Amino acid sequence: MDDRLADVPPGAEAGVLADRLKERIYATITMIAVVVGLSFGEVSALGAVATVLTTALGLWLAALVADQQAHRTVHRHLATGRELRRMLYVSSPLLSCAAGPSVLIALAALDVLTLHTALLAAAGVCVVSLFLWGCVGGLRMGGGALAALVAGLVDAAIGVAVALVKVAAGH
Image (cartoon, rainbow, N blue to C red):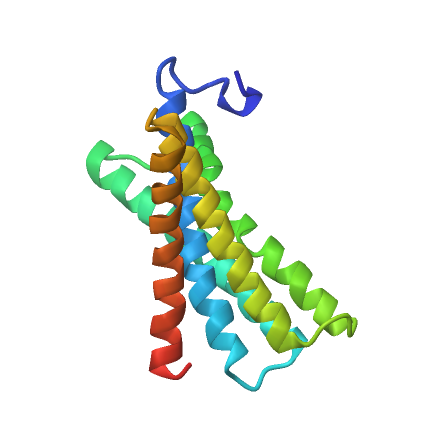
C-alpha cells in the first residue's frame, strides 16, 4: 500500500485515488483552456509561467476551501488531522498540472522554441494525457483494447473541445 495512504481506512484507498485522479483530470482540462488562451495573447514567458502557476495555485486553494466548507457543513467541525491530510493529498494534483506547461514555457524563455509553440505543445501534452488516462480507464474496466482506445479518444476529444471553445471565443 502507498505510505501516503497509511491512515486511510481499509477499502477507501480506491476512493482516495479516484478523487486524486479526478482532480488531476479537472486541472488538466482547465490548463488546456489556460495555455490555449495564453497562446493567442501578447504575453511574455514570465507572464505565461506566472499565469500557469497562479492558475494551479488558485485551483488548489479553491478545492481546499470547498472541501473544508463542505466538511464543516456536514460534520459540524473543521477538518483536522487525518481528514485534513486526506484533503491535501487528494487536492495536490491540482498543483502538479502546472509542471508540464512550466517546463515548456521555460524552454521558450531559453529560446529553445517560441512561446506560442511551447503553449500549444503544453495543450497537446495535456490532451495526450487525457487520452492516456481514458485508455487506462478503458483497460481497467476490462473492455479490451478497442474499448480502451475509444475511451481514450472520447477523453481526448473533450480536451480538444475545450481548446476549440477557447479558439472560437477568440482568446
